[in-house]
Amino acid sequence: MIKKIVGVILGLALSQSVMAGNPDRVGQAGAEQLVVNPWARSSGWGGVDIAGINGVECMQFNVAGLADIHQTEFLAARTNWLGNSTVGVNINAFGFAQTLGEDKDDAIGVSIISWDFGDIPITTVNSPEPVQGTYNISMVNIGVGYAHKFSNAIRAGVLFRAVSEGIVSVSATGVSMDAGIQYFAGDKDKIKIGVSLRNIGPAMSYSGGGLSTRGVIDGSPYSMTLESRSNEFELPSMLNIGVSYDLYFDSGSTHKLTIAGSFMSNAFDKDQEIIGLQYSYKGYLMLRGGFNYEQDIFSSDLRTKTGLGPSAGASVDLPFGKNKAKRFGIDYSYRSTIFTGTHCFGLKLTL
Image (cartoon, rainbow, N blue to C red; front, side, top):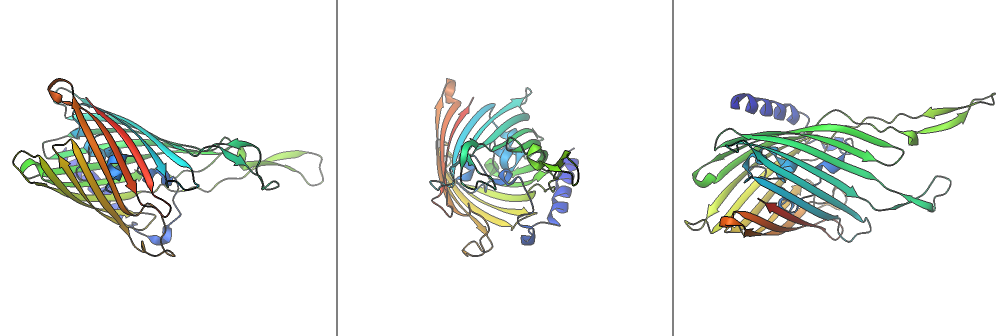
């Protein structure tokens, strides 16, 4: 069974890499919200921890990490996208994960990510200045994941996600699939390797009354409704490969430094390389930082996206309950942008 799962994931990864990292295809994919990280802990070091990530946040990068949760986990986060710019966009995220079975080798998880664009003034072709009234953009992703721990060294998982976006009169819906695997080795699982394939699914297209108009037939008093069909667009599929190594500075694991690196191969964009560090004190206090690199990142004329460059974050986990086994965590992360930066705050409850 392990060989079959590894074979399937690697087969999908190889087929994905054939068309990966093509800058000429930038802008040809839609549903780009799927590649934006709404969680605080992982975004603090650029989402680099493909190999060791676990819990609810792993459903964003490598669903295999679901199998490594303690028992029950709740997570909520709010991101002020692009900081204090005039964009005014916020991302709200909530997730839940739960182990299954007596051996706790299986786990399921659910994540809900919603974008808040606020009230937007209505404008038309004939009235380019705002007229009375506003409208809202709906953008929601719901993911359901499952992971299994085959041994102390191997975890694998799969996730299905419903994608919905649009306004009142025009919308698009679709589905995507993620798959991932993690391998742990060495004393205290110091060495970790992870591979994940993300956002694989059929093309999406817009439909609705907003794409139709009424016209008069020439030479006739009758009118009819004409509908314009929108072109289909692909999902922003990608392949992630990551490694990490834990350094312990004492026998009691009081001080731990994790060094991580990952490669992100995009089917419709430039590839990215990410490096990151995380320091942990007894698992109660964590400080992290990372750097997302992409070709032409330092060129103001050729840079194609925001959210690249340095990132930093911190987490505090407060133990409570019998034997101090339960934890309540507070997370924060900062990502540099071409504006004033993106801030994310999160709360985590582990039972």
